[in-house]
Image (cartoon, rainbow, N blue to C red; front, side, top):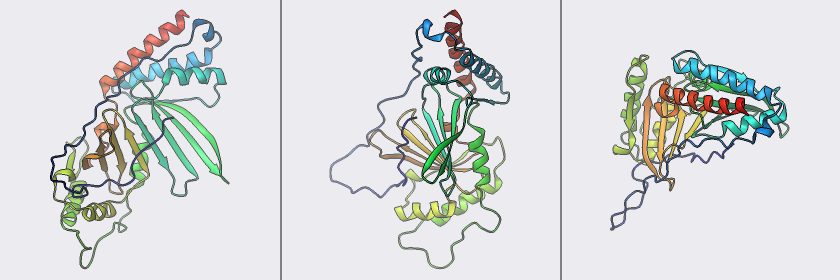
Length: 293
């Protein structure tokens, strides 16, 4: 899987030293696009019936999910090594990665989108006495893995555990308390299907201390995603229901957009229905080649 080079601290306006000269932010220059997988020669496909069966199941799930049906999973744990290599070659690595980690670090799930949008690889690893062992390996089809939604729900603070500030504010904290109240009001009134409420911190007069105060009061969950579609986008869940931190970086790892989104799942993290339909057509082409071979 690709490395996960996500900056752990998202800084907002006021963090750069101002010069007398005009210095423009470098915008992203490269965009990831679909590249068809390099398929093996026909003679290398002989006997790869288990891999064909897995791809057939993925094709069915893509067709169903593109029509707004439920997604599903296909297990790879019992796949022979040569069939698994063929699956890896066809799936490749797409734009979106995610990591879900338990607080003690003993259990973590690495998630990688395939080159086929809406097709995800989930590998569950357990660490015992410094030794890492894979305990599950599946392909999941859907707009976003169900685990990410479930963990975001599970991370929500129980009643009474949400932090509240009493007394004088810390130095240089100015506008964050008002933003915290605005976000909490939006979270309390959020209903499924409504338009996302976006707080654009990049355009607001906030200090680095404001950002720290805000993140402390929103909390940080266990879901961490990175989308590489155009530059990098870091997505993490907060400890509030349906509340996410979404930060965009350019190719120089400079923050160009820093937001809080009140929504069930940020759109940038999900595969759209048309993406799933495209993936179905592309995998159908691959299956046709495999059958002819």
